[in-house]
Image (tube, rainbow, N blue to C red; front, top):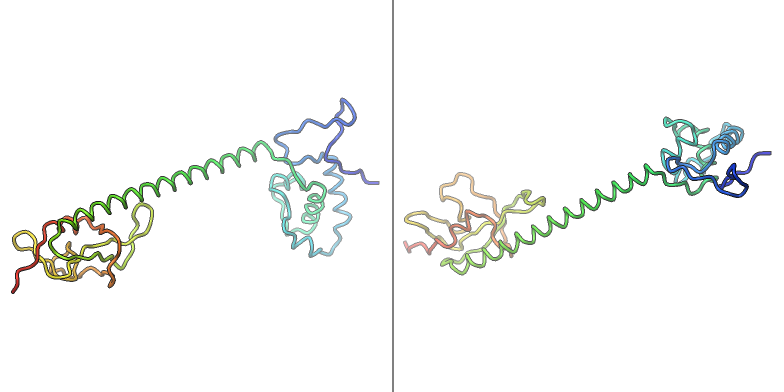
Length: 229
């Protein structure tokens, strides 16, 4: 008769006392128990593949555990006898131990996750601070502006602060001037020159957000209505 598989083994210094757990061993099954499983699987596998084994939700706990059961790290679940052995061992040990290496790996993953989350929160804080500064700058610029203007974003995104967004320009509703002779055409961004060969491609609808183009913002306080022709 086959030896029964027990999750707790008798230690040599007394019956009923568990063996000390090896923190580096991926399975609680002893070498003798694994040998029994291999022999049992060799006899029971047969030539025909069992679909229930093939389509099981999980074929093995982890690669270290499977390597201990099969005796090699180069195992393949496409090999029917190996799959049968792993399925049998999964039934014999539904919950394997967590090794020291696995605990260290999990701790490293958790630390990486914490770092990623901290960086995400920091980016969000910086983005919120930047948006507040932009809103304050825009409010101050509009108060000093003598021409009715709207904000229109570009049609294409750009990456800023780790996120994709559209640069928002200041556009005068009517023609304006700044300095001695610079003209700012209606419907064109303040940062553009009238003779620009390729005008900026701006969205048709105004944005309900502050302008972010620094060059446009520099002109907001300088422009005045163009003289009547």
